[in-house]
Image (cartoon, rainbow, N blue to C red; front, side, top):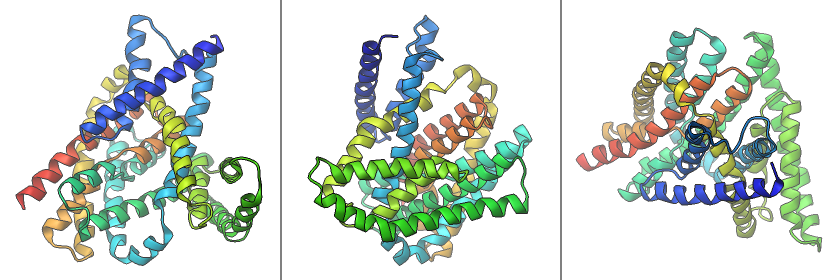
Length: 394
C-alpha cells in the first residue's frame, strides 16, 4: 500500500474517532466508545462488503499496530502523570482503602469463578478476573457531577478508590503476567515476580528522587526547543522497555514513570501536562482503542454469548455488593454505600488494557476478548441509569 494512502487512512481514522467520540460524550458516555466503534466498522462491518482497509500482513496494519502499542503506553503514562497524586493517596487512603479492597476482591472472585466454569483454564480465569476487577469511574464521575454528588464524601471516596484500584490493579497485572509466563503457579515463581516488581519500583523511585530533579534542571537550561518534553518522552520509552526486561508488561513502567515524575514541579507544569494530554489523547491513545474495536468479532461473540451475559450479571452483582461492603466498613450509611457500589461498576480503559494483554499473550481467544468488550460497553450504559435512580429516589 502506498505511503500516501496509509497517511490518508490514519488521518481519516483520527477525524472519525473525534467526531464519534463527541457524539458519545454528548450522550453522557465515554468518548473511547467512538474509537471502538470506528474499529468495529473497519474490522467487522466493511469486510462484509469486501472492503479491507487494514488487512493482516499489510504495511498499513504494521504501522497501525505500532501506533496502537504506543497508544497504550501513552494512556498509562498519562494516567500516572495526571491522575495518581501520592499526597492525596496517603492523606485519605484510610477512608478509601476498604472500598478499594472490597470493591476489587468481590468482582475478581466472581469473574474468576465464572470464567473457570465456562473454560476450566486457570490462566484464562486469572486474566478475566483481573479485567473484571479493574474499575473505571469516568462515566460515574460525570453522573455524580450532574447530580451534585461529586463534592460529597461519597464522591471523593469513589474517585480515590478508583485511583488506588487502578494502581493496585497494575501491580496485580504484573504479578499475574509473570505467573502465566512461567507456565505454573508456585510459591517460588510468585516470589520472583513480586521481587522483580519491587526492584523495578525501587529503581523508578530512586531515579525519580535522585536523577529526574537534576535532569529537569539540566533540561531547563537547554536552549533547544521542547527539551523537557523530549527528555520525558524519551525516558518513558526507556522505562517501558526496561519493564519488559524485568518480565512485566510495558504499561507498568509507563504508569510508574508517569507517577514518579508527577511530583517534580518543573515537569508537572500546565504546559507539559497539556502537551502530554495532546500527544496522548489527540494522537496515540485513539489508535489503541480503535485496535480494540478491530479485534471485536461478531461471529466469535455469538459463540460465547451466554458467557458474556453471565459475566456481566455477575459483575453487576459482585461489584455492587463489594462496593457496598467497603462503604459500610468505611462508615457510610446504607444508601451512600449502595451509591459507592454502583459507582464502581463501569469497566473501560484498564479492563480493556488487561484484556489486550491476554490476547497478546495468546491466553485469551478473540471470542473471549469480544465478550469483555461487550461487558465494558454495557456497564457504562447501565451505571448512569442505576445511579440516577438511586440518588433521585433518595
